[in-house]
Length: 123
Image (cartoon, rainbow, N blue to C red; front, side, top):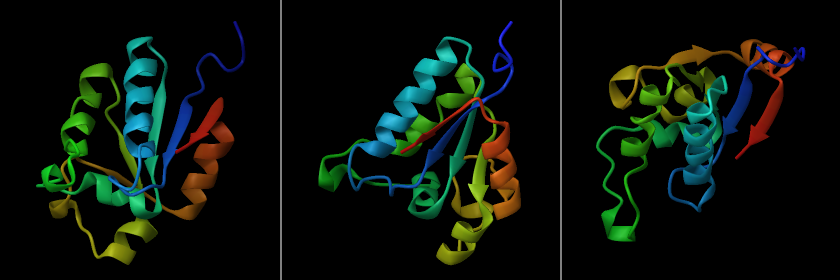
């Protein structure tokens, strides 16, 4: 058994929800990897915290609501959503503003997540 067998894949999201295709591609990757029973850790940093906002209405810009896609992740075993505490503070967001329950992390905790991951993907 490889030493990376039980280590998670850390997926770091840093893009705003509708600025391009990276946010959706990251979530699609997580869904696919989780379907193959990969352990996924999902970390929202910077502008990516905006992906978690409740009541998004992207229809006027011809986009699908990314929050609805995020809500499918627990079905595939991705149950913990790590969020950079500094990014939440910068945007003035609290748990009440968000569509999913989150686990807030500090810079030190993010560094630990990076160190423990088998692979890291940045979107």
